[in-house]
Every structure is written in structure tokens, then in C-alpha cells.
Amino acid sequence: MRALITGGAGFIGSHVADCLLERGDQVVLLDDLSTGRLSNIEHLEDNQDAEFVLGSILNADLVDHVVSRVDVVYHLAAAVGVNLIVEKPLESLMTNIRGTETVVEKAHKYGKRTLVTSTSEIYGKNVSDSLSEDDDRILGSPLKSRWSYSEAKAIDEILAYTYWREKGLETVIVRLFNTVGPRQTGSYGMVVPRFVSQALRNESITVFGDGTQTRCFCYVGDVVTGLVALSEHPDAFGKVFNLGGVEEVSISDLAQRVIERSGSTSEVEFIPYDVAYEEGFEDMERRVPDNTRAHKLVGFAPTASLDDIIDRVIADQKR
Image 1 (cartoon, one colour):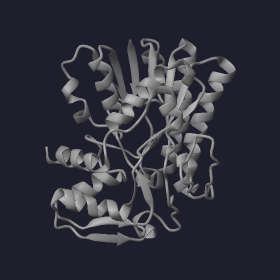
Image 2: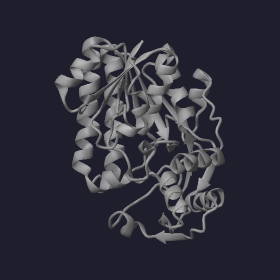
Image 3: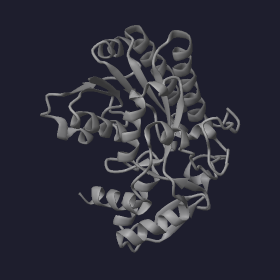
């Protein structure tokens, strides 16, 4: 198999590439390096089965060319991270909506099976005990840039689903819940690598808000295994799946765990949302996935504990 990975030099995309190459596939990695990094794929430089293409998913001619040369598409390219969404909402909307429209359109043109990655941000303020794929979305005002990412990814999902329902394109949608691991940077608001970076420097660990908001973190290796399995299962076409961790932790407790496991002398500093992001910023108080659908279909079950994840990020940053 030959796979196109949009966002292939990104954190998750580079791990998908490793997974596919390890089993003997070929990969084409498309990335504009806006948030991806060449260092994520430098170990593939001499691999004849890996090809890097510098470019944007907004370039329709380029997307047409690379899609025509592969068997399957993993669409991971997106404007990601709360910081980027708040600071550059228009650019983020264009990338996430127009870019996905271009990728899916070209996949349909050439009949290429496509996996589209979405996000747990889809659920917005829904704080249910365990969010299932059919649960309602509860969002704030569309005039708050915080929610533009959720809205854009919802449109991405609609595009992927409608191309399957109306045009027969084999599409799979996956909602990711706080994927973490080596190669992830804290530059765009990703909390675990940011905390680890601060802890290793013995700087104050900055927790935005009061720290009571909770998340479930999932190791990138577990997520990638789920992504690949779902992309290839015929019963997954036209459906959406959650992939996330099972251990719920408050952000305040996460900061303490990072301090303990890194042996840091850092202290925790709480920063109001209005200062960290923008006035009137709203956050999700809770985000816990129900992975039942993915577990039943492909056996998805996270293997790495939160402590394992933190330790691996610490080791990665020390390197």
C-alpha cells in the first residue's frame, strides 16, 4: 500500500508514517511545516519508501497530484492548538475547512479511501460522564474564536460523511482526545509537553484557569494503532469513532504529577483565562471519551498509563 499522510511532518502524522513503514507500506508526507517539523521525520531521510512533499493542503493542484499517486489518504493536516486558533482564527478556519474540502474532493476524484481526523472539541461544553459519538454538541457563541475550531471540524466531519453517503467515497472519521507522546511540542498550547518543558527547566508550571478542568490523555502509539485499524475496516466507513485515554485527571493534578516524575523544583502558577488567551475565553470543564465503538470494531484499548505517557515525554525532551 502507498499512503498519503497530510500533516505528515506533524506530531501524529510522523508516528502514522512510522507505523505504516514498519509493516512495509510506502508513504508520501505532505506538510507545509507551519506546525510540523522536519526534525520529526529526519530519521526517514534515507528511507526509499518515504517521500516528503513540502506544500499546503490549500494548493489544489498539488493535492490532486499526490492523491492520484496513492492508495489511501490519512488526512491529519490542520491548524491545531488553542493558541493558534485564538491568535489566527481566519487562517485556521481556511486551513481546516477549505483544506479538508480540497483533500476529500481529490480523494473522491480518484476513488481513494480516506480517514479524516477530527477532535474532542466537537463536544464543546458537554460534560457527560463518558462522551459517545452520538452525544449532543454544546457550544458557546460563534463570535468567540474559541469555538471556531470546533465548528470547522464539524464541517470537516459533515464533508467526509456526505461524500460517503452521497458519492460512495470510503471515509472514516476519528475524534481524537488529547493525544500525547514524543515529538509533540508545547508551542501551540499542548499541555503535557508544555508542563514537562517548564518542569525540566525548574520554571513555574503555568496552569490556565483554576486547574479543576479535567482531561483524559492517550499515548500516540495507541492512537496510531487505532487510526490504522479503523482506516482499513470496511465496517468503519461512513462512521465516526472516539479515540482517547481512560484515566481522567485534573490539569492541576497533572501539573503535580509532572513535577513529581521529573524531579523538578517547579511550583504551580495559576493564570486566568483572560490573561492566557483572550477576554471572555471559555474552556471545556470536562472531556472524557467513550471508546466503546472503536473497541468493539477494532479492539482499541489504550495500553499506556498517564505516568507512562509523562515519562516518555520527559525522556523525549531530555534527548
